[in-house]
Image (cartoon, rainbow, N blue to C red; front, side):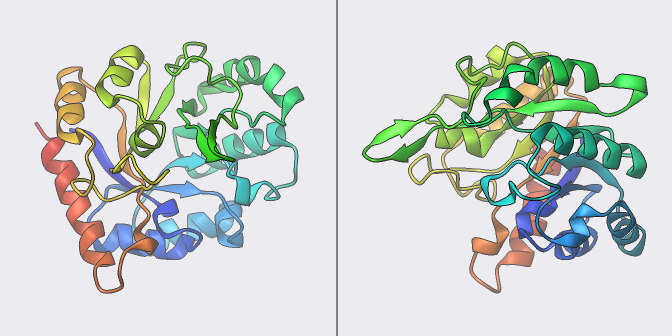
Length: 257
């Protein structure tokens, strides 16, 4: 049975709250989203949170969101390398990274080679490249990312499949999974109505066939982690703890034996 993990991005940018909710709601571990919360940027700080709340850090997400472009400096290659160093230091075996933005031309030109060099080097973490999505701008859909001409990201051997991103891109989740089959190393699980961009809803509150996906992944002997990456902070107050706990329970049943 896959480990069920909570991403601290679910409570962005409050890293400590992510750890606390993972512990209270029975998750098996935490994925640290490095962001402008200084606690997320420090090996000592995240290690301390893991020890305090009794939940291990199993993966690290590079600070590659638009809002975290300044975190750890402006050089995206160095940020990826530093994320690998953090993952190694805390015992996490996966680093999640987005493809380069279109304006990161130099980084994009060497991105596939860089990932190939860092991926599992010296028995370090796998580098799992994440599927992204187009955005609506000026009345048309725009792709802000490079390396995404192939939705299945065929240049990379380890992938993070993000289901909310599939909804935002108006793609067929099961078709995309089949095209990635054998390379999905890590799962970011959340729902989407496929009408409002990147929603990251709790499972069962959108239209994505997450149950079908879980069935297919279990049949394929998926050996990675199921990471709940939800926009919990957008939910009404008074429902957030229950939604976090219920999502963990949903994933345990869906990905159980």
